[in-house]
Image (cartoon, rainbow, N blue to C red; front, side, top):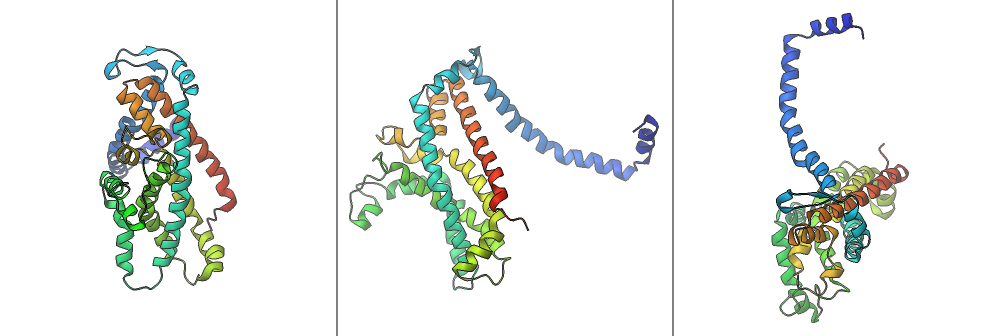
Length: 293
Protein backbone atom coordinates (compact mmCIF):
# COMPACT_ATOMS: atom_id res chain seq x y z
CA UNK A 1 0.00 0.00 0.00
CA UNK A 2 1.41 3.38 -1.03
CA UNK A 3 1.68 6.36 1.30
CA UNK A 4 -1.23 8.05 -0.51
CA UNK A 5 -3.49 5.03 0.02
CA UNK A 6 -2.48 4.80 3.68
CA UNK A 7 -3.38 8.43 4.25
CA UNK A 8 -6.66 7.91 2.41
CA UNK A 9 -7.47 4.88 4.62
CA UNK A 10 -6.72 6.89 7.75
CA UNK A 11 -9.02 9.68 6.61
CA UNK A 12 -11.83 7.16 6.09
CA UNK A 13 -11.88 6.09 9.78
CA UNK A 14 -14.88 7.69 11.44
CA UNK A 15 -15.12 8.90 15.00
CA UNK A 16 -17.24 5.87 15.91
CA UNK A 17 -14.58 3.53 14.49
CA UNK A 18 -11.86 5.29 16.42
CA UNK A 19 -13.87 4.95 19.61
CA UNK A 20 -14.39 1.26 18.90
CA UNK A 21 -10.66 0.82 18.39
CA UNK A 22 -9.84 2.59 21.66
CA UNK A 23 -12.48 0.68 23.61
CA UNK A 24 -11.32 -2.59 22.05
CA UNK A 25 -7.72 -2.06 23.17
CA UNK A 26 -8.95 -0.88 26.57
CA UNK A 27 -10.82 -4.16 27.10
CA UNK A 28 -7.97 -6.29 25.76
CA UNK A 29 -5.20 -4.54 27.70
CA UNK A 30 -5.96 -6.01 31.19
CA UNK A 31 -5.95 -9.53 29.76
CA UNK A 32 -2.75 -8.91 27.80
CA UNK A 33 -1.10 -7.40 30.87
CA UNK A 34 -2.15 -10.39 32.96
CA UNK A 35 -0.78 -12.83 30.39
CA UNK A 36 2.54 -10.98 30.20
CA UNK A 37 3.00 -10.61 33.96
CA UNK A 38 1.59 -13.96 35.09
CA UNK A 39 2.45 -16.25 32.16
CA UNK A 40 4.94 -15.01 29.58
CA UNK A 41 7.41 -13.31 31.94
CA UNK A 42 7.55 -16.29 34.39
CA UNK A 43 8.21 -18.65 31.46
CA UNK A 44 11.26 -16.73 30.30
CA UNK A 45 12.41 -16.21 33.89
CA UNK A 46 12.16 -19.96 34.53
CA UNK A 47 14.15 -20.73 31.39
CA UNK A 48 16.84 -18.27 32.50
CA UNK A 49 16.96 -19.65 36.04
CA UNK A 50 17.34 -23.19 34.74
CA UNK A 51 20.80 -22.18 33.52
CA UNK A 52 21.76 -20.63 36.86
CA UNK A 53 22.53 -21.51 40.42
CA UNK A 54 20.05 -19.19 42.05
CA UNK A 55 20.66 -17.20 45.18
CA UNK A 56 18.22 -16.25 47.92
CA UNK A 57 14.97 -14.67 46.75
CA UNK A 58 16.07 -15.03 43.12
CA UNK A 59 19.07 -12.74 43.56
CA UNK A 60 22.73 -13.44 43.19
CA UNK A 61 22.20 -15.86 40.31
CA UNK A 62 25.35 -17.50 38.99
CA UNK A 63 25.23 -18.67 35.37
CA UNK A 64 26.37 -22.30 35.17
CA UNK A 65 25.26 -23.18 31.64
CA UNK A 66 23.87 -26.69 31.27
CA UNK A 67 25.01 -27.70 34.76
CA UNK A 68 21.48 -28.16 36.09
CA UNK A 69 20.45 -30.21 33.07
CA UNK A 70 23.52 -32.45 33.28
CA UNK A 71 22.76 -33.04 36.95
CA UNK A 72 19.09 -33.67 36.20
CA UNK A 73 19.69 -36.27 33.50
CA UNK A 74 21.80 -38.23 35.97
CA UNK A 75 19.37 -37.87 38.87
CA UNK A 76 17.42 -41.08 39.52
CA UNK A 77 14.83 -39.22 41.62
CA UNK A 78 13.88 -37.03 38.65
CA UNK A 79 13.28 -39.98 36.34
CA UNK A 80 11.43 -41.91 39.03
CA UNK A 81 9.17 -38.89 39.61
CA UNK A 82 8.58 -38.52 35.87
CA UNK A 83 7.75 -42.22 35.68
CA UNK A 84 5.36 -41.81 38.62
CA UNK A 85 3.68 -38.95 36.77
CA UNK A 86 3.21 -41.12 33.71
CA UNK A 87 1.69 -43.87 35.85
CA UNK A 88 -0.74 -41.41 37.41
CA UNK A 89 -1.74 -40.01 34.00
CA UNK A 90 -2.24 -43.50 32.53
CA UNK A 91 -4.91 -44.19 35.15
CA UNK A 92 -6.45 -40.76 35.63
CA UNK A 93 -6.87 -39.68 32.00
CA UNK A 94 -8.49 -42.69 30.27
CA UNK A 95 -10.64 -43.75 33.22
CA UNK A 96 -11.94 -40.23 33.89
CA UNK A 97 -12.78 -39.71 30.21
CA UNK A 98 -14.51 -43.08 29.74
CA UNK A 99 -16.53 -42.88 32.96
CA UNK A 100 -17.59 -39.27 32.35
CA UNK A 101 -18.61 -40.07 28.78
CA UNK A 102 -20.80 -42.98 29.88
CA UNK A 103 -22.33 -40.88 32.66
CA UNK A 104 -23.01 -37.99 30.29
CA UNK A 105 -24.87 -40.22 27.84
CA UNK A 106 -26.70 -41.98 30.68
CA UNK A 107 -27.81 -38.71 32.29
CA UNK A 108 -29.00 -37.47 28.93
CA UNK A 109 -31.83 -40.02 29.12
CA UNK A 110 -35.13 -39.44 30.88
CA UNK A 111 -34.61 -40.90 34.34
CA UNK A 112 -35.91 -40.00 37.77
CA UNK A 113 -33.82 -37.66 39.91
CA UNK A 114 -31.68 -36.79 36.88
CA UNK A 115 -30.88 -33.29 38.12
CA UNK A 116 -29.88 -34.71 41.48
CA UNK A 117 -27.48 -37.17 39.88
CA UNK A 118 -25.88 -34.37 37.87
CA UNK A 119 -25.38 -32.37 41.06
CA UNK A 120 -23.89 -35.34 42.92
CA UNK A 121 -21.37 -36.11 40.20
CA UNK A 122 -20.38 -32.44 39.84
CA UNK A 123 -19.95 -31.81 43.58
CA UNK A 124 -16.24 -32.80 43.67
CA UNK A 125 -15.50 -29.97 41.21
CA UNK A 126 -16.78 -27.27 43.58
CA UNK A 127 -15.08 -28.75 46.64
CA UNK A 128 -11.65 -27.49 47.61
CA UNK A 129 -8.88 -29.90 46.50
CA UNK A 130 -7.44 -29.83 50.01
CA UNK A 131 -10.79 -30.87 51.52
CA UNK A 132 -11.19 -33.65 48.96
CA UNK A 133 -7.69 -34.96 49.63
CA UNK A 134 -8.19 -34.91 53.41
CA UNK A 135 -11.47 -36.84 53.15
CA UNK A 136 -9.87 -39.49 50.98
CA UNK A 137 -6.86 -39.65 53.27
CA UNK A 138 -9.19 -40.69 56.10
CA UNK A 139 -11.03 -43.12 53.84
CA UNK A 140 -7.68 -44.73 53.05
CA UNK A 141 -6.54 -44.84 56.68
CA UNK A 142 -5.38 -48.39 57.36
CA UNK A 143 -6.65 -48.45 60.95
CA UNK A 144 -9.75 -46.26 61.01
CA UNK A 145 -10.56 -45.88 57.30
CA UNK A 146 -14.02 -46.57 55.93
CA UNK A 147 -12.73 -48.65 53.01
CA UNK A 148 -10.98 -51.23 55.18
CA UNK A 149 -14.00 -51.25 57.50
CA UNK A 150 -16.42 -51.97 54.66
CA UNK A 151 -14.30 -54.62 52.95
CA UNK A 152 -12.99 -56.12 56.18
CA UNK A 153 -9.40 -55.73 55.05
CA UNK A 154 -6.20 -54.22 56.40
CA UNK A 155 -4.76 -52.78 53.20
CA UNK A 156 -2.13 -50.05 53.40
CA UNK A 157 -3.78 -47.96 50.70
CA UNK A 158 -1.36 -45.02 50.73
CA UNK A 159 1.71 -46.43 52.46
CA UNK A 160 2.27 -49.49 50.30
CA UNK A 161 4.58 -48.45 47.41
CA UNK A 162 2.94 -51.02 45.12
CA UNK A 163 -0.57 -49.56 45.29
CA UNK A 164 -0.20 -46.03 46.70
CA UNK A 165 0.09 -44.44 43.25
CA UNK A 166 -3.11 -46.20 42.19
CA UNK A 167 -4.91 -44.93 45.29
CA UNK A 168 -3.89 -41.35 44.51
CA UNK A 169 -4.95 -41.75 40.88
CA UNK A 170 -8.38 -42.95 41.98
CA UNK A 171 -8.84 -39.66 43.83
CA UNK A 172 -7.88 -37.81 40.66
CA UNK A 173 -10.44 -39.74 38.62
CA UNK A 174 -13.19 -39.15 41.19
CA UNK A 175 -12.37 -35.43 41.38
CA UNK A 176 -12.44 -34.65 37.66
CA UNK A 177 -15.37 -36.78 36.46
CA UNK A 178 -17.88 -33.97 37.03
CA UNK A 179 -16.00 -31.48 34.84
CA UNK A 180 -15.55 -33.94 31.98
CA UNK A 181 -19.16 -35.09 32.30
CA UNK A 182 -20.55 -31.56 31.93
CA UNK A 183 -18.57 -31.00 28.72
CA UNK A 184 -19.71 -34.31 27.25
CA UNK A 185 -23.28 -33.90 28.51
CA UNK A 186 -24.10 -30.74 26.58
CA UNK A 187 -22.73 -32.28 23.41
CA UNK A 188 -24.58 -35.55 24.03
CA UNK A 189 -27.81 -33.60 24.52
CA UNK A 190 -27.56 -32.37 20.92
CA UNK A 191 -27.46 -35.95 19.59
CA UNK A 192 -30.93 -37.37 19.18
CA UNK A 193 -32.00 -40.92 18.44
CA UNK A 194 -28.72 -42.72 19.23
CA UNK A 195 -29.27 -45.56 21.64
CA UNK A 196 -27.73 -48.96 22.32
CA UNK A 197 -24.15 -50.17 22.36
CA UNK A 198 -23.70 -50.21 18.59
CA UNK A 199 -25.14 -46.73 18.14
CA UNK A 200 -23.04 -45.47 21.05
CA UNK A 201 -19.77 -46.41 19.36
CA UNK A 202 -20.80 -45.72 15.76
CA UNK A 203 -22.79 -42.51 16.25
CA UNK A 204 -22.42 -40.95 19.71
CA UNK A 205 -18.66 -41.32 20.16
CA UNK A 206 -17.73 -40.03 16.65
CA UNK A 207 -20.03 -37.02 17.07
CA UNK A 208 -18.57 -36.34 20.51
CA UNK A 209 -14.98 -36.81 19.31
CA UNK A 210 -14.11 -33.07 19.20
CA UNK A 211 -15.17 -32.67 22.84
CA UNK A 212 -13.44 -35.90 23.82
CA UNK A 213 -10.26 -34.66 22.16
CA UNK A 214 -10.43 -31.36 24.04
CA UNK A 215 -10.93 -33.20 27.33
CA UNK A 216 -8.07 -35.58 26.47
CA UNK A 217 -5.59 -32.77 25.82
CA UNK A 218 -6.55 -30.76 28.90
CA UNK A 219 -6.62 -33.80 31.19
CA UNK A 220 -3.18 -34.99 30.08
CA UNK A 221 -1.79 -31.54 30.87
CA UNK A 222 -3.63 -31.49 34.20
CA UNK A 223 -2.49 -35.00 35.12
CA UNK A 224 1.15 -34.16 34.48
CA UNK A 225 0.81 -31.13 36.75
CA UNK A 226 -0.64 -33.07 39.68
CA UNK A 227 0.67 -31.79 43.00
CA UNK A 228 -1.98 -30.98 45.61
CA UNK A 229 -3.34 -34.52 45.96
CA UNK A 230 0.09 -36.00 46.52
CA UNK A 231 1.17 -33.17 48.82
CA UNK A 232 -1.84 -33.59 51.12
CA UNK A 233 -2.46 -37.33 50.94
CA UNK A 234 1.17 -38.46 51.11
CA UNK A 235 3.06 -37.45 54.25
CA UNK A 236 6.77 -36.65 53.77
CA UNK A 237 7.61 -39.61 56.03
CA UNK A 238 5.46 -42.00 53.99
CA UNK A 239 7.61 -44.92 52.73
CA UNK A 240 5.60 -44.98 49.49
CA UNK A 241 6.37 -41.34 48.65
CA UNK A 242 9.40 -42.04 46.38
CA UNK A 243 7.22 -44.32 44.24
CA UNK A 244 4.30 -41.89 44.22
CA UNK A 245 5.64 -38.32 44.06
CA UNK A 246 5.12 -36.49 40.78
CA UNK A 247 7.69 -34.35 39.02
CA UNK A 248 5.87 -31.20 40.17
CA UNK A 249 6.05 -32.45 43.76
CA UNK A 250 9.79 -33.07 43.40
CA UNK A 251 10.16 -29.60 41.91
CA UNK A 252 8.38 -28.10 44.91
CA UNK A 253 10.63 -29.94 47.36
CA UNK A 254 13.74 -28.97 45.42
CA UNK A 255 12.92 -25.34 44.72
CA UNK A 256 11.22 -24.38 47.98
CA UNK A 257 12.25 -27.13 50.39
CA UNK A 258 15.95 -27.23 49.51
CA UNK A 259 16.06 -23.71 48.05
CA UNK A 260 17.65 -24.82 44.77
CA UNK A 261 15.40 -22.88 42.39
CA UNK A 262 17.75 -23.23 39.43
CA UNK A 263 17.63 -27.02 39.58
CA UNK A 264 13.88 -26.86 40.15
CA UNK A 265 13.52 -24.64 37.08
CA UNK A 266 15.34 -27.26 35.01
CA UNK A 267 12.76 -29.84 36.15
CA UNK A 268 9.97 -27.53 35.04
CA UNK A 269 11.54 -27.16 31.60
CA UNK A 270 11.78 -30.95 31.35
CA UNK A 271 8.10 -31.26 32.25
CA UNK A 272 7.21 -28.54 29.73
CA UNK A 273 9.11 -30.41 27.00
CA UNK A 274 7.33 -33.68 27.83
CA UNK A 275 3.89 -32.04 27.80
CA UNK A 276 4.65 -30.26 24.52
CA UNK A 277 5.80 -33.52 22.93
CA UNK A 278 2.68 -35.39 24.04
CA UNK A 279 0.44 -32.53 22.89
CA UNK A 280 2.09 -32.49 19.45
CA UNK A 281 1.52 -36.24 19.17
CA UNK A 282 -2.12 -35.76 20.17
CA UNK A 283 -2.59 -32.96 17.63
CA UNK A 284 -1.16 -35.18 14.91
CA UNK A 285 -3.15 -38.24 15.96
CA UNK A 286 -6.49 -36.43 16.19
CA UNK A 287 -6.64 -36.25 12.39
CA UNK A 288 -7.34 -39.98 12.34
CA UNK A 289 -10.18 -40.20 14.87
CA UNK A 290 -11.69 -36.75 15.51
CA UNK A 291 -14.65 -35.86 13.28
CA UNK A 292 -15.49 -32.15 13.07
CA UNK A 293 -18.45 -32.54 10.74
